[in-house]
Figure 1 (spheres, rainbow, N blue to C red):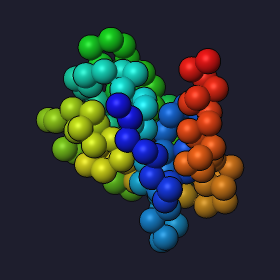
Figure 2 (cartoon, rainbow, N blue to C red; figure 1 turned 90 degrees about the horizontal axis):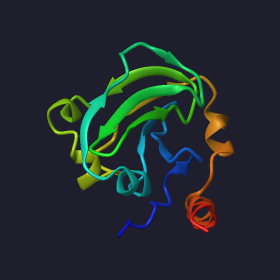
Figure 3 (cartoon, helix red, strand yellow; figure 1 turned 180 degrees about the vertical axis):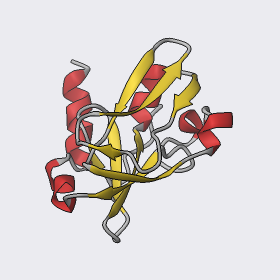
Length: 132
């Protein structure tokens, strides 16, 4: 069963989350809903440090026992940190998608892009509509 979507994040319709770190950067990952759909995650291809990403473009790849899925950048900017722990423990995303399962930190080109993403309630409504 999915955990509630934290209120301190914004969500994309591709099932990524972004948390404003208050310093011009955002931590991002995939949502709990997404990891449930993927089931057991067995491999994560992390973005390259220093890579410039554009909102909506693939930034990482998550492979599960069911499928291989792109992870899309929720905001544009430079990748300034990646969660190296996922290389040895990709299942961290299954265990704690909103915590230890984070994927990357992006120094945002335009922090206002966060405002274009869904809030927690909007994302919950999006998921509910998608499932019907």
